[in-house]
Amino acid sequence: MKVQLLIAYLTIKYFDAIGKNIRTNMTFDEMVDVQANYRDAVGHVDQLYIKEGQGETIDGIWYYKMDDEELLAISAALKTHLELK
Image (cartoon, rainbow, N blue to C red; front, side):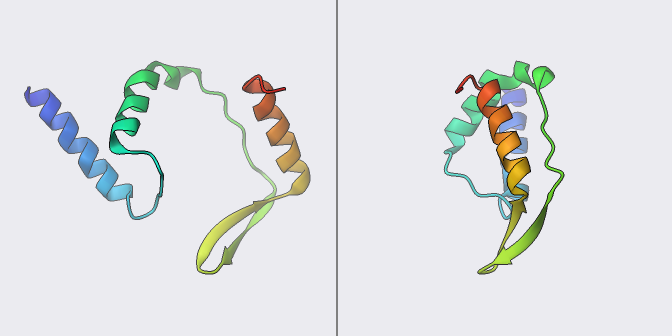
């Protein structure tokens, strides 16, 4: 029971710390479900890097605008990886 309370406390503190910088439409229960069900996937992650583009602030919100060619290449790689193509 103490371990579960500690995990819950640390999880809440973690989300409090990042909450001001990240927005999501996931509920807390959905986040816990993702963490619980995909923990083993951490060792099997493919990474794609965005190398070309620039940051821009629009209406007070910062966006990263990718290079069009790189956007198409990464989009194609993701579709292939997710078997959408």
